[in-house]
Image 1 (cartoon, helix red, strand yellow):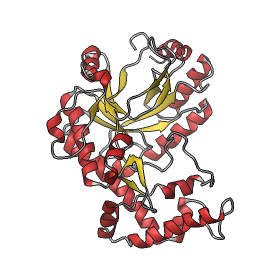
Image 2 (cartoon, rainbow, N blue to C red):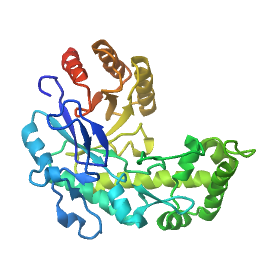
Image 3 (cartoon, one colour):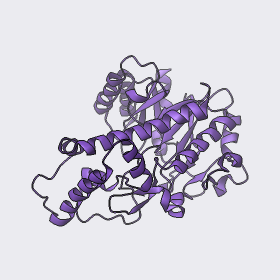
Image 4 (cartoon, helix red, strand yellow):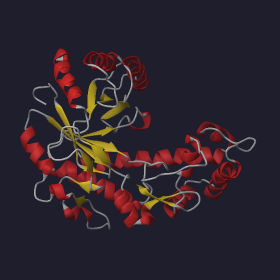
Length: 361
């Protein structure tokens, strides 16, 4: 990092299960992570009132790697804890009552429901733990809202050919907590449930065709149903409240910043310290457009607008293209660039990074 000119380390504080190729590891090439484990040592007293708590990865059993990274980074590098929330298959399989329950009553084991009080308390305790016990510059939240139906499980199948909108409907949560809270908010939740189920049953029955008048997008569905539109708005409010509670109840002062991996959201602009433009596998012109859109939506907002650039999958294809993509992100109005990620990136791309970044010093 010193040689390359980077100034911030985004380190995984916890992570979900994944099957990775690590091209420059000294011990392995293919690696299956333990899944939903912490790479720091939790303060157990913070989780006493709830049934779920982070499990420490065997890799970190003897060494608290977040603390060690803090020590080595010192004052030279800003340390950000990349933190995973509702994406947790381990807790989901152990406590299916805390997961998203779709319109047919199926549990989505990878997706904790952010409307469940115990899930919210777990997520807040996780952030409070990190912000209190480590000298972090910031916490970057991933999956602290609603997860979708499609996940990438082993041999995940969909021979019906459900489109992205229909898959979104399959992932809507109608668990007890959601139904009770939506009803309290004045939403006719059973009507919404019946409407969503009717759309999906129509697709399942008529595939590969669709029934006449079948909605083709969320906006189309909202136009057809006021209650469904209100339900979508309520879901947004649930996620927004969670982020606001994390900021006010868990991070306290402004020492530890709160960063999101989502585009600018006016509803959170007074709470969140950073939003993001995901420019994975985008060319320089595509990156420029995406960053301009982010800057345009944020107006004169003064926080961090970071562009996330993926080092892999053939983009960038050269050192020159990397230079163009970084230049596009900055020209588009982003004031930070995040490179994803060290462990998976082709070694040649890391060399390009070391040769390119000094030009922006």
